[in-house]
Image (cartoon, rainbow over all chains, first blue to last red; front, top):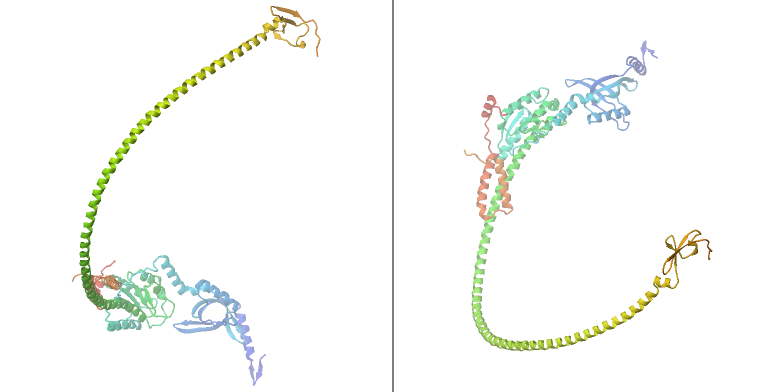
Amino acid sequence: MPETLNGKQVFSLQEVALSIKETLANKFTYSFWIKAELNKLNFYRHSGHCYPELVEKSGGKVIAQMRSNLWRDDYARINQSFLNTLNEPLKDGIKILFLAKIEFHPEYGLALHILDIDPGFTLGDLEKEKREAIKKLQSEGIYNKNRLLTLPMLPQRIAIISVETSKGYADFMEVLDHAKRSWGYAFFQMLFPSLLQGDKAVPSILKQLNRIKKVIRHFDAVAIIRGGGGDIGLSCYNNYELAKTIALFPIPVITGIGHATNETVSEMVAFENAITPTRLAEFIIQKFHNFSVPVKQAEEKLISISKRMISDERTKLRAEVKLFRSITENVLLKNKNALKDHVRALYQQSNFIFKSEKENISVSRSQLLKSATAVCRVEQQQLTQLVRSIKKEGNTRLKNSTLTLAQQIKQIRLNVKTTLARWHTEMTALEKNLENISPAKVLKRGYSITRVNGKAITHGHQALPGNILHTTLYEGEVSSTVNSKQNTP
Amino acid sequence: MKEQINYTDAFQELQTIVSEIEEGEISVDELSEKVKRASHLIKICKTKLSSTEEDVNKILKDLEGGVDES
């Protein structure tokens, strides 16, 4: 409660603070969306909480500023959603759209309690445009077009898009001039002046690219050069139309825009991007070195190698001549002597061979004659003897055969006669036996044949009382009827 | 002026000649011809390094005249 001091009503600081807190709590009962620039995140690793410093600027001046709290769990969730959407964490220097409650704490004062941040908003005016431009260029298949062109070995003729008074242009020209003075490299450059940052830079650069296109046969490359103007207003280089024109430009476009922020789309699609105009000029000079050094080396090598080859050849030739002379002389002499020796030896040897061969032939001839006669005589005698012995042998064999034959015939005749006589006796005996067992002879002795119904019977049960029996005798037949019969066992 | 060999081709041919000579593929008989050719090529390359034939006035005229290249 306030107290009265020297006639004045006096409040304690806590009473004031609590009063403010109550007033604010009554006034701001709900949370709402706010947009601001996240100047500093102020993340405390130990606690996991953030105390972001929020500002709003106008014309580069801060026009509003406020502290805020972002508690650990909210921070973790929001940071993850930023990583998912932007491929970037929550960080300093970005524009954010956030949901917050106004809070007042007697001890710590006023702060916005951040509940949520919309990553889509941050993506919005910068990254979104950039990413979409890249994606579009890639999907249209033109992203790499300029990068795949061929830069002439000596990029001598350069169309420069820049501002004559800029530091970047001066830096670039200084490197080229230095190369001209130091190594005698010749360049031809022509300035196509243009705005290089801010929204108006896009149509300005496009216009100059169009002009360059008209005189393109005079140039090897286009250089876009900027520098010394700070890092603001460079999002124009993320413009899709500008990047597309660069990608599709018929000759290499090289860039030296000179800034510390992320590479822009125009730089990405350019044939070559250097961090600064100076570096870009050095890139060109390097091409000249790459050409000049081998030419110089070629010249030196040609001279030294030619000299060495000629002197080597001369030395070799001298040595060869010397060697050749001594070898040939030697060989000639050797061959001459050898030839003489050969002639002599050949003559002697052939004479000797002749003589001995002649003797051999005459000896052979007489030997041949002698042995031929002897062979003939022997053969004749053997032949006569053979004829005689064949005749004698033939006669003897004929006589023996005739004798044997006559004896055999006689023996056969005798055998036949004996066999016939035996067969005759046997036949007569058989005939007699046969006659004794004939039925006529049996019947004559008193036996008869009894038949019933034409069938001869041999047993009493074959005839029944009343049957007519036909009995055949030696001469004639008798018929009788059965009256009774006794069964014999 | 007679149409000269392109400097890029001159550079390539020069490299070829040098490597041939270095590799020992060139005999002394051919050396003279090759060296003569190489020095001609070196001259072309050096001239290109130290001079350009472009003329600003001509380009300006082309720009004004709206020469259509495409």
